[in-house]
Image (tube, rainbow, N blue to C red):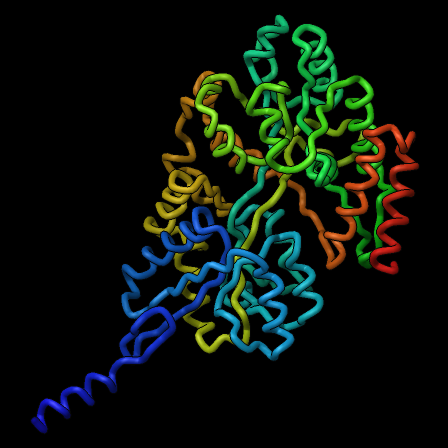
Length: 429
């Protein structure tokens, strides 16, 4: 009996309880917070599987925070770091708020040896501050202009003639022809965000803020973007919707001949199998007359960060470097896996040679290799600066844009002045 009791005591001594799991003493646990189990969660689990091949003693505890992850993290920071994970996912547009408002909360991963020359540079910009770089870039929101080839054909046009870099003037002319021949407006537009305008502004390498963080809506790119939107609307080429679901219905059900958005919309397009073979995507149109404009832009995306207060930060850093920032064969295949499994295209440039990146896709017109195209366009995306007041800016511009589309604001200058006034009322700046 004594031997049995002693055996139980030894067994208990070598087991440590961790919420949700039992981990042997001496084992190491890295906790990761994320949202979206089918996209971000799936991708991180694949990364953990790769790491565990060579580090079986490390448990990657992947915890979904379905809603309010930013607020939960901010509450933890205000409580001195209590209850925070080792690694967390942040949307790119919000990270500057945390870097500026909570100096020193993240590990400098540049100093830890991450080679950032191997990532798409537009992702690196927002996570950089005073020579330090804090995140591991994850997915791209590389954008393109999506077109229904069947509607182009109905309008007497050959879709093959449009599979190239175009200007917004050429897109407008295309839209006029399609509308005249088919009755279909060219563009599905969601009035509850500024995606359409911000994609155009970023494509020109322009910003919504000055370097000191003050609002700057009077740039040539912003004025040209608003002028383009107004012209499209005045010509009856914009189909205005309200909210995500209505916007999706507009292009999936054939109410419009196209839309402007990022590659992550592919899954939504494929949810309508009747449209197989009808869609193609071309590079983001060029904002003519604006210096530095490109046929490339971005919308969306997030990145991984390690908290400097983490007791396991060295392991967390090694995990991210070994999977998300490595040219090792298993790491590159991991990127190939998440592209096929979740439609998650990483921004680690060496990963673009994977078979799933280069494969043709039967859903699209003439089996377009859409991922290969987006991966190519991604490299040219200009860097966007967000600042802590990015959300306030987007709300103000969104509201002003809608008034313009309704005809209540008559000029681009009126739109900008209205947005500036609302922004000032919201932020005091």
